Image (tube, rainbow, N blue to C red; front, top):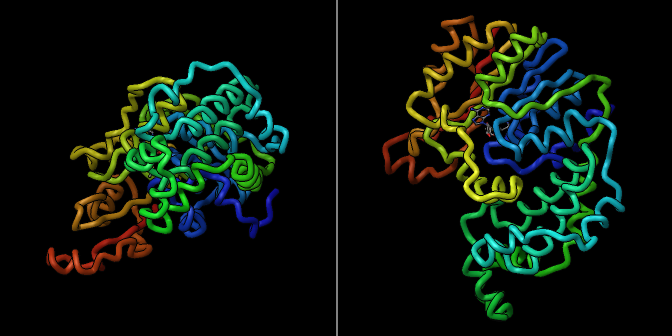
Length: 353
Ligand SMILES: C[S@@+](CC[C@H](N)C(=O)[O-])C[C@H]1O[C@@H](n2cnc3c(N)ncnc32)[C@H](O)[C@@H]1O
C-alpha cells in the first residue's frame, strides 16, 4: 500500500469544488472499514480513504468521474507505461468528433486532431487500461485550458488559425501566453508527466473497491437492497445556486461521450429544493452509522447552505457536530460593500456522533 506521505492528490483531476486540500482533515472523521463516497467528483476524498486502508464504494452521476473511479479506485494494480502513452499516437481512424465540433471555439485544429486520435486509441483498449488512458486524456484536456474551464479561448484560437501567433503572444499576459505555447507544443512530454501523476494514485489497499455511475438517490436505494455493509458515508454534493457541473464540464462530457447535447440531471442540490433533497438523501442513508457532510456558504453570491440550517436537517435523524474549516473567499471589499462579513463565508463539515 502507498505510504502516507506519498503525494497522491495529483493523480486525480483538478476538479471544480474538489476537496484535495481538505481530504486529510475530512477523512480524519471516517470510521470503520467501508467508506461510501456518494458524490465522487474528482475522487480526492475516496483516494485518501483508500490510502487509509478503507474499502471504497464510490458513486457519481457523471461519466467524467466514473472514468476516474475505474482508473484509481476499483483498479489497484494496473499502471500506465510509457508504451501506453506512445500507443495514443498510432494513427487511428476516427470520425473527427472534436475537430468537427470544437474548432476554433475551444481547440486549435492540431490539438483537436491529436485528441480525436488519442481517444480513438484509448477506446480500443480493455479496462482498466481504457479508463487509465481516458483519465490521461481528461487530465491533458484540462491542462490545455486556462483555469481548467472551457469558457474562454476562441479569440486565441482564431488568431492562431490566422497564423498570428507572435502577435497573440505579445498581447497575452504571462500566464495566458504560457497556455498558448503549451497548446502549440508537442503533447508527448506533458502526457508522460501526467502519466506519472496518475501512477502515484494507483496502489493496492487489499480491498475490493467499487465505482458506480448512478443518481445518488437510486444508488443509495440499490446499496440498501444489496445489503451492502457501509460504515461511513461522505456527502459532498454540488453547492446550492453555484455553477452546475453539467454546464461547467459540458464540453468535456460531450467529448468523453462522443455526442453533443449530453444530458446529466445533476440539479437536485443546485435548486431551491436543496434542503428537501438533503432530507430525502439522509433518509436513504439511515442504514449507514457515520455521516460526514461537506458544505459551504457564501453570503454574497448566496451559494451553498448555512451550516446551522443543514445541521438542523441532519439532527432530524441523529445528533451531529458542526466544524467550520476555513474561509475560502478573500474578496474583502465586495464583502464590505455588500455589508456582509468575510467571516461569514465558510467551508464546513457536519459529522454525526
Ligand atoms: C462537489 S463535487 C464532489 C467533489 C469531490 N468530493 C472531490 O473532492 O473531487 C459534486 C459531484 O456530485 C456529482 N453529482 C451531482 N448531482 C448528482 C446526483 N444527483 N447524483 C450523483 N452525483 C451527483 C457531480 O457530478 C460532481 O462530480
